[in-house]
Image 1: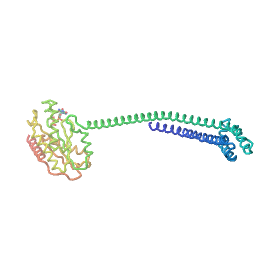
Image 2 (image 1 turned 60 degrees about the horizontal axis):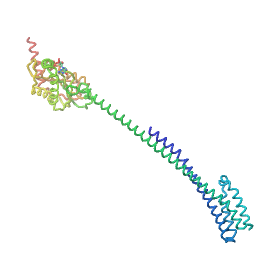
Image 3 (image 1 turned 90 degrees about the vertical axis):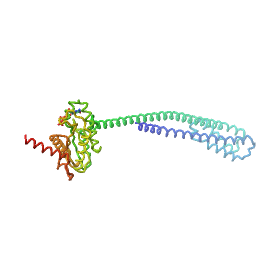
Image 4 (image 1 turned 90 degrees about the horizontal axis):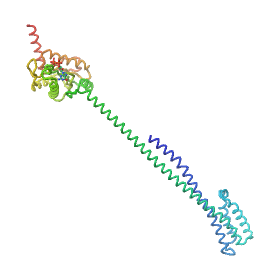
Length: 382
Ligand SMILES: Nc1nc2c(ncn2[C@@H]2O[C@H](COP(=O)(O)OP(=O)(O)OP(=O)(O)O)[C@@H](O)[C@H]2O)c(=O)[nH]1
């Protein structure tokens, strides 16, 4: 918009400047016109003076004639003839005077008298030319002033247009920036569990997709008998416990894992882990830490403090269908739950790893398996 206005202004100025300057300089041509008349008058006056001062003239007739011819030549201009009525008679008079002077038929006094009319005509031409020039200059000055005003206002308009454009652009930029930030904020909210502040299920899937092709460990953690905890102490205390446990799991995993709440009382942890042994170490660490802290659980069927059940699996991110990985970890968790809870199990998921990352089984895993055997034996006996 500003650019278009600027172009219009430039066009306008170019349209004005060129003819106006031309007009001005053509008027300065009047200076030459005036000068011709002046020069011619000076020659005539020199002849007049010569005739008046010295009688007989000190200069010989050819000198006077040359002066008169010069005066005639400068006087005999087409523009003068067309513009001023006194030119034709004056030139005729000069012509007559020159021929009479050449023949020596004229006395000084009548010659001087004959020069008066041409001199008067030339003086009038000088004054007229001077007036014309003055008018042209005044007109040019008026035009210049007028155009300066136009130029000033146009520049002001362009400046204001530029300002408006800049302001609108700035507002647009701010709106876009705000919208982007809001979108990012919403995305961030959409990926977070509002209660514990850890990521949610969508965040887990996104992080798995974004993870580099390295060996990772997935831990699924579920609180045991949380329904009873809620029923006894109330949901606000249950919420509090969820927050405490998410912090505790994070701490037990040395803050190296990304933590997620998948819903209800189930958490997931994703962490880089080279082999099963390392993952087993992490699982053991979580179980031990919750034992150490021993959060009170007034309704635990086994009269224990709060306990956790863990299912874990090793996988190579990017190489495996994550749903298979999750299913394997979930099965392991289910197995722990079914085996009496308060323990961990690592899934032996062959399809989850393209590289051999499997190591030794964890002690808790062994403990669960032992408990399974015990349960089976008990069932067989009853
Ligand atoms: N305080 C609280 N409780 C929740 C929330 N979301 C789900 N729950 C409760 O968590 C409990 C989960 O219970 P279940 O899935 O039956 O499992 P559980 O009682 O822990 O039993 P097991 O998992 O078999 O050991 C339910 O009572 C839900 O009401 C929450 O945001 N806050």
